[in-house]
Image (cartoon, rainbow, N blue to C red; front, side, top):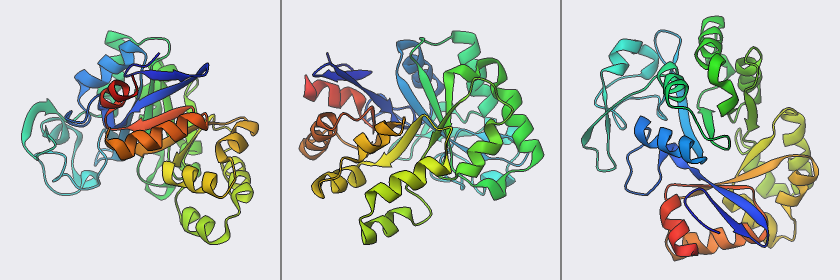
Length: 277
């Protein structure tokens, strides 16, 4: 069975993750309508978070506003109500009707419209622990509290996840170990077992770890089943990001499925599902 939610091969189910809230390649990023659609269908959906001037978080990827919104300047220097007044841009850079959401707006959508029991919304924090302060942490907990069970928090900085999640019961934990020079060191040493051990030690509470798909395939070429190694450590694996449902993307997805990856991050879940059949 294959649809925009998941694909099952040889009895093993792999989810498609809607990268930045996209169901198809033509979708603009971070629109509430597409995010809530995915959550009600039971999809895995991802959005990014950056800190704004009022010590809350905005649903954006970049620290600067120009590319994704009709605003300008740093998100960190922009107040919440100004952010809420900005429009998002489409893939061609054109203004669209949808506006920037804050984390509390996103949580309110889930509280209002509900979510399928399998729906999981990843919050990928794009900064580090140095950017956090007690007010940011408290505002994060307050925003998510009533609906935390529908979310998983991730970052390339394990300390950030630990601080933000500490007082949010029900919030699930993820970790991306492919940052801070880890990939470059791994490509030099080829010590895949050591990489897995370091990742597990860095974020012991993580249930879902995120790996660049090129790393997964490079380990495979070297004869190391890195997905299997993480599975043996009790972690599920998301491989990111397959941007297009073209022949190259399809070949990547097919090998990841053979390796029994748990989730594939993609900008075109609908397109991949159609091509996989």
